[in-house]
Amino acid sequence: MANANAMIAPVAVLGVVLVFGTLFVSLGWITPVDVLPFALVAPGLSAPLLLLHYITHDLRHATGAAQRVQALLGTPVLEQPAPDRRQSPTGTEIRVEHVGYAYDARNKVLSDVSFTLKPGTVTAIVGASGAGKSTLARLLLRFFDPTDGHITLGGVDLRHIETSELYQRIGFVLQEVRLIHASIRENIALGRPSASQQEIEDAARAANIHERILGLPRGYDSMIGEDALLSGGEQQRVSIARAVLLDPPVLVLDEATAAADAENEVAIQDALSRFAQGRTLLIIAHRLDTVMHADHIIVIENGTIHEQGRHAELIARKGRYARLWTLGGYEEPQELAVPSC
Ligand code: ADP
Image 1 (cartoon, protein in one colour):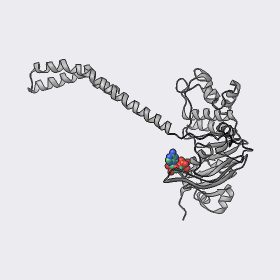
Image 2 (cartoon, protein in one colour):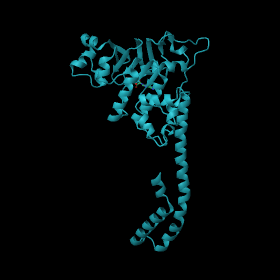
Image 3 (cartoon, helix red, strand yellow):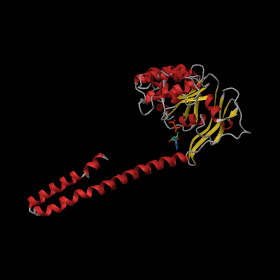
Image 4 (cartoon, protein in one colour):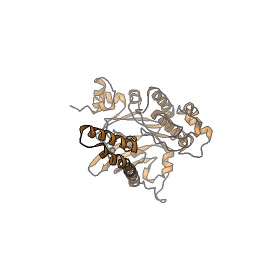
């Protein structure tokens, strides 16, 4: 945009006319007096050109905005349960029963997935990139509903639980952090606007982000995207504080901390492991120690459960998971894609 402005600015246009005029005169193609009308008229042309340029630029912006609004409007809104079907879960056990999911008719991403998250246990999901791990986590959070089968929390189908009640029971910390254009305080208290300043600060402390917030120009009143310019890892810690404040008995966690640098990663892992204590946990696991110590490991491949069990059981089974260990260890989830012989 700046380059285009400079190119069609009157002075630049006059400069170009004079340079070429001088060149053509020296070559004997034209006489100096022939250059004069061009030198007088050409700079005057730059104003309408500039206007045209601005209009096309605005048009491009507007088209982009319109497309984003359309995409937003096209996002399906999940149905709230009808009052007569609304039920309250008893307990926090989650059952995934014969669940299948297809983003579109040709593309079945998950099929016949069944498992149970028992209260207070840690379940690790491992599998190659594209295997369907995130889709499964999102189904549990009811970002969308299964195409086949169903998921229950405390014996009630997620579709029959009121959204606000669901999110008091299932918290999440995912890779793509969604902070809103509001103060840090409001971002942390998003799920519980009535929380006191003390509770908000305690949550931020538990998420290892309190000190950083105090260092911002307006502390907890600093605005995201204005005077609160946070790194990816710091944003993730704000989202952990948000989840901590809700204090949910079940937590869905995408463990990868791709957005974080080393220092942030330590802070994030430390915050998460403290937060996870005593909760039912479903983790899309990327770390060796998480996988080893999980109560239940689910190996997903091409949208189905390939193997499941505890670390020792899976090793003894000498299947896919075991081969990874004998091949030199579990480093990246991608390695679980090694084809079977
Ligand atoms: P993982 O978390 O194991 O990497 P995902 O659940 O993200 O796997 O993706 C599983 C499959 O679903 C992939 O083939 C991916 O391309 C596809 N997929 C993921 N999100 C969408 C979407 N929003 N629309 C269509 N296909 C998707």
